[in-house]
Length: 221
Image 1 (tube, rainbow, N blue to C red):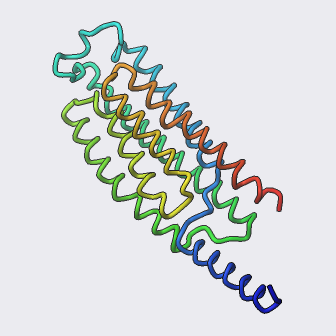
Image 2: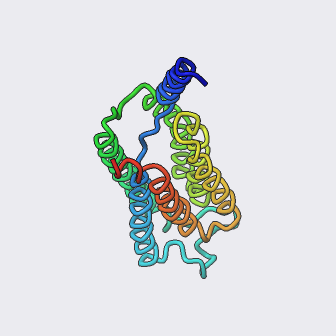
């Protein structure tokens, strides 16, 4: 290969890399996933302490669960507090993800809010908006047994749908969330534990893998 061909190949490679970066948001930080996982585990611990203290969702007392799978009125009284906790968890995890991603991009000398980032945001908003409608319906009608499965499955589908605008690795996290959510449908008594597994542990595992695979290269710059 002569010098002209080599130069042409390098130009084509650079153009291809630029096009790839413009169509995908490749700046997500692995620490964002780790932070989200830690936040979810802390929230799970708080929820567990509330529910244990009030004996709301006791696994050894089936009187709290009606034959149709709905929880008792005592459990319904705590739905508002748990909903507020869930919203706060999402906000804290989201803000943390923005901070870690911004720090990563600043170190790499890249912009955070790009066209690809906007595409990623839109692709996530649609399924998450649908999830919010479903979960709100379940809360208003006291179908508490379906909240955890719905949140996990819809979140997993959101990640799978968004994988075409960011790291393809996120698809595997999405698949794991969907699987855990489907399992939660059949064992509602384990809902809080499965929620902690999906949103907590799986995020920490994913974030750690992403840090070693991508972020560590940036930290060496």
